[in-house]
Length: 281
Ligand code: BTN
Image (cartoon, rainbow, N blue to C red; front, side, top):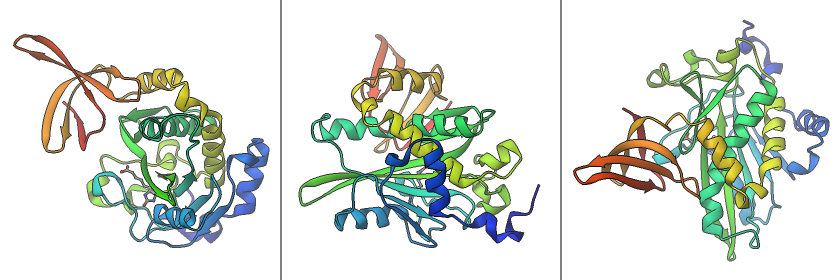
């Protein structure tokens, strides 16, 4: 395998190359302004700053490295400089599409499916699975995560879709506690991957699904089930300190997980909107 660190060109991220990839996919309109930053605390914060400055819908911030990258549940998101994709897409929800809250519930699932489509379009041998609600896996290991944050500026709501995709990083570059649970696309297919191609593929596939998929959620829901790492399995989920267990049997209308547990009086179903921690039992 080539030594990535010996070739600085491999680490560069170039807006013109990304634009060319988007053109090839006829997806020029999937993104508006593109901002590439060598280092920032978090691309989500940069995108929020752009929203406050009135940046257009679908502005994109790509970070070559982050000093305070955030994951869900207050976790840190680590990635070595220039290897992976760390980006945030600014979206202003369409007030006519549906309630903002409901869009907020469905959006992460739509993003997860778009990541799976994008990766399979670039690397057809990788089979992506979704660990509800926000983690993307290949061969039982996590390679991407989604952190969606929302706020409003002058009463205008916005979403920041923050995504980290381990593209070219190696296990040796990750914290030891992730060695058995995380992977990268490069590790899965044993060759270096052009990040521009992956970035363009995501924008293209997201554009295909958004915003229509927020209204017509049935095909997204089918894919969530087909790609789910949880459905059909006994799981435990922790919800604000409460631990609940049961069999994951499906998804409800807004992507909530349906858990079935056996009680003294019979089977009981519970719908979970989000969970702090989900484990397969
Ligand atoms: C998770 O799996 O917990 C979500 C990880 C999201 C990480 C991305 S990297 C780009 C964007 N900026 C951040 O600070 N976080 C997201």
